[in-house]
Amino acid sequence: MNLKMKFTMKFVRFFIFGLTSLGLNVHAQTEIKVGSKKFTESVVLGELARQSLVNKGLAAKHIAELGGTRILWNALVAGNIDVYPEYSSTIEEELLKQKFSSFKDLRTELEKNGIGITEPLGFNNTYAIGMKKDRAANLGIARISDLARHPELKLGLSEEFLQRKDGWPALKEKYNLPQDKLRGIDHDVAYRALETNDIEVIDLYSTDAEIQYYNLLVLTDDLNYFPKYEAVYLYRLATAKRESNFLEALQLFSGKVSEPLMIEMNNQAKIKKMPTEQVAAVFLKEKFAINSNEKKSSRAERIALRTQEHLKLVIVSLFFAILMGVPLGILAAKKRGAGKIILGLTGAIQTIPSLALLVVLIKPLNMLGLTGIGDTPALIALFLYSLVPIVRGAHVGFQQIPLALRETSEVIGLSRQSQL
Image (cartoon, rainbow, N blue to C red; front, side, top):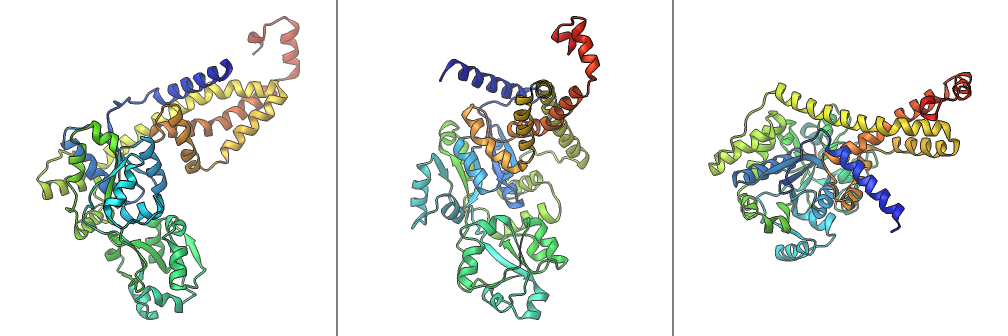
């Protein structure tokens, strides 16, 4: 690597460090990070893990609703998080893409990636297909195979289920289903769309609280297509080795979280709108006599906290965007060749979907020795999106300075800095 490249890398690292550290809390490197996926049950399980770790005297932070399966797995392998809740068949089908004859074999394969797995927590949250009971009764539908007689049905399926190897494509083939009216829809939105008859059939999880709330019928999987999705915790072996009480805190739940208990916790969080911190605290107290001392925060306190976090992200990212965007805009106005490149790149960044950008940032940040999740990528993404209006504004503003004024400043002998 030549001197120029080394200098560039140092500058990039310094700039990113400044961007991500200004105005933000700096956590100890040993703080355990618990991740969770973007649905209620995963968030509840993530919060259970965090509170159990804290009860063992460990510093732990829950990064809730981080993303989907692949994002959580990549973050775990990269060391951006230390533990997150997962499901056995998801590990086999989506992550390792291999079936295992025993749980021991699965554990051995995971260890090759530096990942450990707890014993199952005690419930099976398999995928299922459901529809409103009255609609199913009118059409005489009770099994998944009955759907084959009704090609007109409108299906609303989650994006992950549509794309999974063990999701819709294989289910459609297994049951020879003719439906082609498919809508990719968020899991939470699907229930409301079902209620308004925008869709008629959805995918769901067998422990969803909404099944009872919306009076849904879970169609019988008469060809036994869906495998078992036993809940577990995946964790970094390095973290378990470093923190003596880490594994004990996670194993507390092995075989202790039954399906009815999980459904009730989902119901408290999703239907009754109880904060997940409180749901987890109640469970720990009732099941294990553990008082987690979780303070019940009011809605005003939660809004104030989120507002503070939002303002920090916006102010810091905007400060650095102005710091870099204004000079870039002026350079683009003065140098036509450089201007095409600068305006083209900043314009292209604006077209990248935010989720895709956050995923793309994980690996480069890890290479720079920075975390690829949480505040760091959020700040960088906001910084990049802020560049477009600032660069273009500076570019247009500089170009609109009257030519006579610019020529006068040169004639009277002003320096470049004074002219600017």
